[in-house]
Length: 89
Image (cartoon, rainbow, N blue to C red; front, top):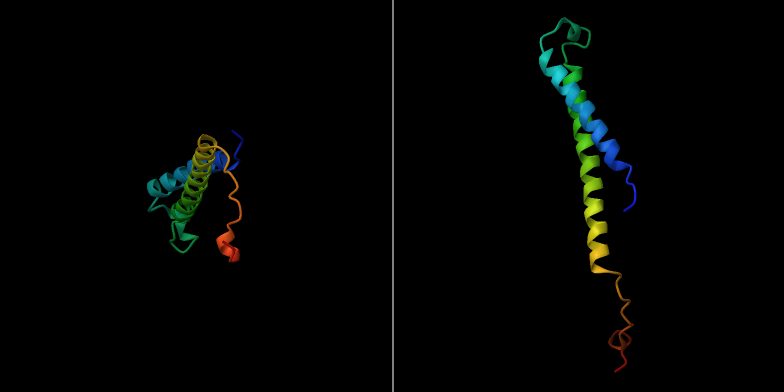
């Protein structure tokens, strides 16, 4: 099985996103958010990064599943051109 770069990228972003979300939740009413007009930047960007990481990991997992299905099924046999399409008997 080949190496899919989406898997480690997905896990990395998922971990960083989860850390940012947790930090944003624990510092919800902190003074540092006054500079950002009261918006909890860590929470919002953590959620964005977390979702991106989960999507990357899901895409990599789905790709691996598809590759395994193709290996089990074997290569497809090419169908000969049907004469019925050409109007021939």
